[in-house]
Length: 401
Image 1 (cartoon, rainbow, N blue to C red):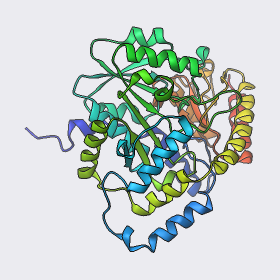
Image 2 (cartoon, rainbow, N blue to C red):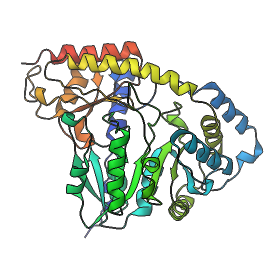
Image 3 (cartoon, helix red, strand yellow):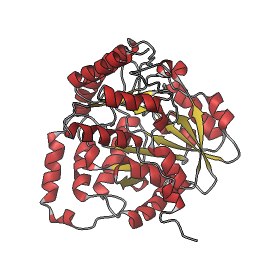
Image 4 (spheres, rainbow, N blue to C red):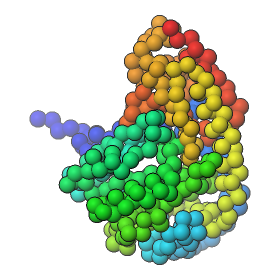
């Protein structure tokens, strides 16, 4: 009998749908087609100059030409601890910080460290595409708690309780949310956190969009709001979104010392230390003020309002107002089964493919986020491209038969 060439564990992993859509859009653009991409969650701003200069200086320092501690530069770990206290009021020691190769490594290492085979993780859907794969690789079982536009994509304690079983070990809590832009208010965060504490659950909370909220919405860290969670909270974060540093690949994990030590042991064998130059850039970022993100947030807010207005003007599309991150998540269920140039898409994935081919606009279908019937559109792109892209979508969808 011939053995499979690829292990079952790795064969089960799906390609990142958001990166796949972005790659296809870029390939079409390189071939000369005027594609506008709403797929990637990447700010269109350059990394602030003072951060770049810190990295350039690090390149000239022989200290950073060598291996450094696998868990992160001591000065960066302390700066992250200081930043966490400054921004969310949560006090941690530098020994509770693990610096990772981007936020994705932090996500994987958190679940790999906490889960044994069969342990269940409650995941609010729609969810970011990487969470299911990280849980699966760790041997965990994902249990979806499905939300929709009628609640602004927010899950209630009652929904979470209905999904909890004796095998539930972790609640994954994300606010602001990718892909929906949903933000839980402080009272909602408190109710959910107290429920998790009551049932002795771990909470893994992804806070990478903490500084991107709009209107009256505010970020509230569940670790701060619910101190009774004690040492059963793991915080995931990074510099990618706040400082326009997606390509620098610096994230971090904050948690109890035993969890951080175990995750650091894993990282020591997987990747060793994060690039020293990138770590120094991150040090400059988290040690500085938040003026750069304030400027980006103003632009994102303007684009957010434009996108939501334009999407809601399209017959058959319903888009709740996102209050955080830089994504809109409209329902397109009202368009499925209708005719577009002789084709009748039955799914949002099919409709997204038609829009890319015919209107030359790339969006990510809801299938990628666990809820078919929706699109995710990032508004982290220029104002003119945003208006042109949504305008093309509106014009094309307006031809529905």
